[in-house]
Structures are given as C-alpha cells and as structure tokens.
Length: 120
Figure (cartoon, one colour):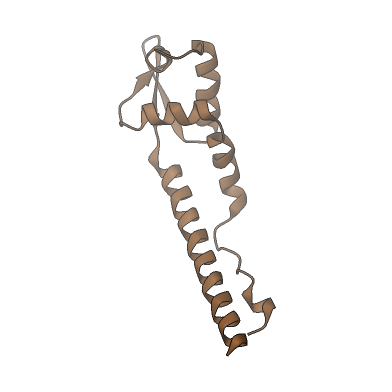
C-alpha cells in the first residue's frame, strides 16, 4: 500500500451545504438557545431571554441567524413570535459528522495496516 492510498476519500455529502449550519452553531449564545429549544416546545423571545444577561433584541438577532440557517422555525401567535427547533438540519449535521468519523477511522485502519506491513 502506498502513502497516496492512505488519503481519505471525499465524502459524498456536500460540505458547503453544511457550512451555514456550522457557522450558526459556532456561537455559545446560539448553542444555549438551542438547548432551551431542544425540549420540543415553542418558546417566546421573552421566555428565551429570561435569566439571560442579553437583551431581547440581542436574543432576537441570534434567533434570526438560527432561522436563516433553518435550525429554528418561527411562528406568530398574536403579537408574540414563537420559536421552535427544527431537528432535521441538526440530524443532517450528525449524519455528516458520523460519515466523516467513519472515513477517518477507515483511513487510520489503512495507515495502521500499511505501517505494520512495512515493519514485517
């Protein structure tokens, strides 16, 4: 086995389609909001801002980022905007990361086999 065969093969997933999701999740405040929304209930901005050092306006800006990445959905109920988690994009990221992990596991196995065959 040559060193060139040790390179991981490209994933079938389109990584650029996951980039906006990773970017949206790359903020501690947005991850905290997702944790609050992960219970599966719709939550208002006021509810999400409760016990937060951030203003409702700041929370709203973070929710808009998550909404543009299609991680949360927003509906109106009277004057309130209610947000809920859309689990499909998060599941898509999990599937992508699982495939990436499997790819690297296979590459490490090939490397181990190559190194062991060179020492034999």
